[in-house]
Length: 345
Image 1 (cartoon, rainbow, N blue to C red):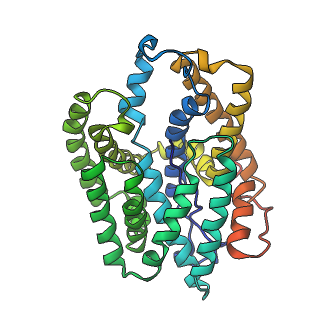
Image 2 (cartoon, one colour; image 1 turned 60 degrees about the horizontal axis):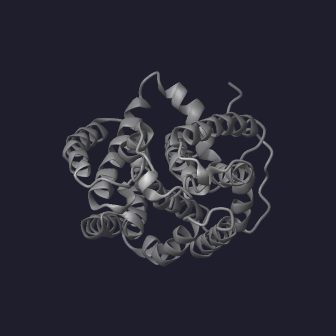
């Protein structure tokens, strides 16, 4: 099962004021998280090795890499960014003097329809749950004061990890925490990469060590163990803050070039990846293959192609094709598509 956040961070075309700026770091973070999600999704989409008896399957180095570096690490990032992006859309509606309730209901309803359709390609898809949970949390996002929004999100997230170890139970808390963090200006804090980010990174890194050690005591897919879920949540904080710190260095150019196009077209790329591997699955007997490394290389190749194609597309168009339709459904009007969203170099 995967979770993906695909909300664009700028709800309306920029009017030039500081409050309507687009946060390129958030786009890049979304693209970075999409990469991790695809590495987890592809074995599930292709049903890799599902016809091989369980006692004949062998654990490989790639299994270990996924279990300790990828699985459960990117799920919290997507859920948190989903809530953060929802609040940015709400703030955008308010800046325009428009009520946010109807646009958000239309937005989440459209996402639900997309998720239902996507389920025919990938039964483990999570967009439906995102949409339903978003609708349930929407009144709180709209009407709670920001301190209550952030506080309830943090408390619900901690409770979900403590009681269930992660999974779907964390969605409400992470959505609310992301929305509350956006209300307090977290995108600006991350973009600055100052002392708060450094402190959070160091604390999370220190906590990650015992968490990973604990995960080793509960072997198996970390998506279904308490230790794996909690370790994933802590590593998610390490990844986000570490990425934000690298954003302040010359590496930023590489991060932006690779991940920002993926993040700005995350919904399109997420759906396209399922379609590609569903078609490939008709030609390759993945069910009889137990080679996670080969499938992971295929996922990496697809990610590289998507990054390049997304950059080319965004040199000519403002949004990805699915994002464009989704935006029109949100705002109930035709939105101009042509116009570069990324620089040519």
